[in-house]
Amino acid sequence: TVTSNAQSSVNTPLTIQINGVDDQTIVLSATILFQDTAVNDVFGLDQYRTGQFTANDPDDSVPLSFGIAGGTISNGTNAFMYGSETYAIQKEGTYGTLYLQADTGKYVFVPLDAAINAAGTGSQTETFTITAGTGSNIFTVRVNGADDNTVVQTPPSIALSDTSSPDAFANMTGKLMATDVDSTIGYAISGTGVTPGSYSIGGASFQSKKTGTYGTLYLNTSSGDYLFDPN
Picture (tube, rainbow, N blue to C red):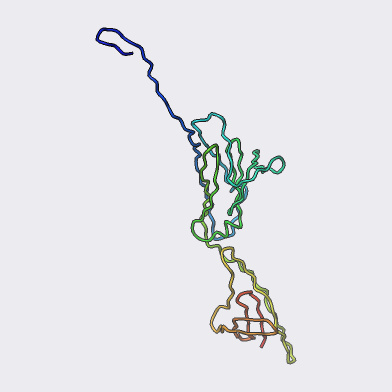
């Protein structure tokens, strides 16, 4: 309303113009953590990570649909079941597989034991991109790696039986067995008197030897194959 000195007034509408834009959907990020130890860890059902992604779009009141960038959709009998929930969207990563419900944003991450145990020392991460509406954000899987212990199988004992007659003893062979999920295995003979070199016996190659009281042990330091030459 505009009023003049003559006490007359005129009603004039005031127009407010808003130039709107389509605001981007806001998707909240999330991070999960797995702790590796020096032993061979098993991440069973109790180690699955569950949660629910949330998103908001100020321009749209229609329920949002969630997805995983690069994920695949498996309907019906191919969908993943965990507890009483069904997850139709999935994507496999380095340290496990992420499953997602499109309508609720609920998720479950199923860890991959072998990959987590082999993560090495320090903090390792991988990410998945979660989408909803016009927005997206990052879901981070963090693994605190450890140097897993080398597992060595005890080799069988070598038995030599002496008699009252002069005996001839054949060479005895075998293979050392060990596993280490974090690194490549190398074999060695411990103690003093070890002689590195290049030795060939019966067509087999060895890179280390040690002479003891009752014979000489030869070892292939890469494969773990060994030969004992009785004295």
